[in-house]
Image 1 (cartoon, rainbow, N blue to C red):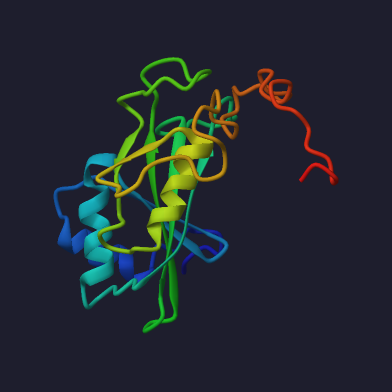
Image 2 (spheres, rainbow, N blue to C red):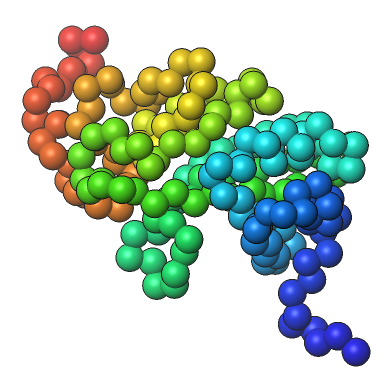
Length: 187
């Protein structure tokens, strides 16, 4: 008799991915009905192409891309940053989450380009990824190879950091003081 609290890694996508990539080391979790596959960064694009195009999965809609900074998180993660993809299959009425972890190779308190914080873009699979990847780049400093237009989307180009990183100061670095306030009558 199964225990009621045992994980049920029964989502059919797990079996499909395992069959397609037999030599790969993926991690899979389920929590409160959400199934998540953790994929190494080097294999992310190939796995995402499979999830979109294979008849067994058909995740035809990329609902969201976001990132998480696990700096000082109480449990061990495979990397400091996680890029999270939320996929939907309208044909099967299923949701599936894919995560890929990145670990910085240099201090993250500035805007220096870190070669360890790169993932392959999925804009060739889902065109809607363009703006979402730009937002992850702007807020977290994670860059996407082969993105058609990777530039800031929420902040100005010379903004001095990536404000959703946990080591970014809460009050900023003085960027507010450098710009004049525009009042109602001036606009």
